[in-house]
Image (cartoon, rainbow, N blue to C red; front, side, top):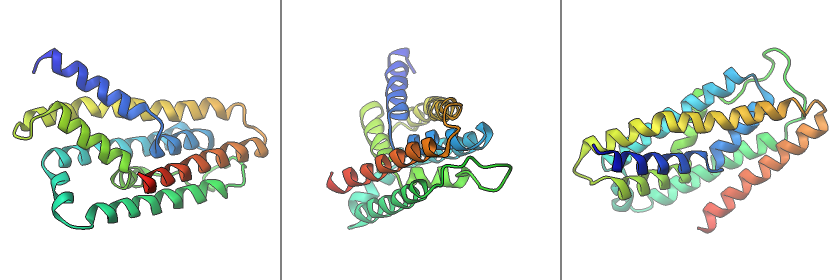
Amino acid sequence: MSLALILPMSAFALAASISPGPVNLVCLSSGTRYPLSQGLVFVTGATLGFVVLFVAVGLGLYSVLSVVPGLDRALRWAGVAFLLYMSVRLFRDDGRLPEGNTQRAPGFMTGALMQWLNPKAWLASASGIGAYTSGSELNQVVLFAALYLPICWLSLGSWVYAGAFLRRYVHRPTVLITVNRTLALLLAGSCLYLLLD
């Protein structure tokens, strides 16, 4: 595989992974509320969930959506429902940082499931596979997924670190409530975009 293909694949993976989206907002929120280690567990689940989705799309899963009537609509509605659920949880947060283990951060499985219900992840997978691979070449899909793995993890991890940086400045519950409600509204707004798209 040539460097001429690896560099554009890597650039695409970085742009798709680091740009704001539902998973990135949850990473940012986790960084402001929970220890880094808990946020990075979510990042690991989201990264592996995305890579599995990416490989599945590369192996032809996306074509199933065009064959089975209504499957793409059902997936979109399930994703919107899950994102709205996460938005409501974030909006209702009381702004007090957890002491000890009284509250649990979104975990590994939440991250993985969120990617499968995230239309941005499906779009990134389908457009990346379509633009940089030929459907008959499994080694191109595997290479792209191997590039995506560290790039996605580091991109999502940077959102958790950004949240941890903000945590130093949000000692008062009212500040954290404002941050959380803003993030919740942005997350809900992304659902509106998905429904209108």
